[in-house]
Length: 115
Length: 114
Image: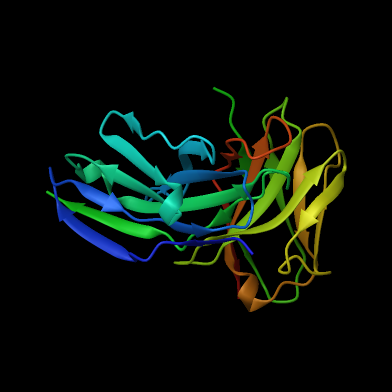
């Protein structure tokens, strides 16, 4: 069975701090995809990144970076120099390669960045 | 930039009533999805739809639920007899093709069952 665990329910930081959101996944598939979505207070789901299981290279996009480690089944997300606008719920999700793209979400981590 | 749209943004209904939630996916997309999010909880997959039929459905998607693509643009989710526990945010999403690609989510419809 596939499962995504985000053990951190809530994180609170002060602006300019770095923060890492943890994501651990379970799957028996060798080919799969991992995603991060942001859900700001307005409620929509905003796509941040997709990685496939064969690409373990870390990725950086501005203040955002992702660390994919297959050995520990983790796909962690770091925000550097956090800003108040980063306050949101962040979801990690897993999709199998051959199941039409259905996303399995973790419980989400609510990040609060205080000025 | 093309986007997925959903109407209404908020629907209030009484228990036992039928509701239809509407979505307009991005025009050249082929795969369509419904997810729901009960307040404060995770986003859960309901159903995927391709080539005018259901590809996969979750345990949540019981006989009370149905989906339809009545024309070339709309994609609807119907709940026949709503229950209090159906209160949630319902998200529509679409993919340009089969597979685990970035899913484009709509803004959601908040359904409140009283």
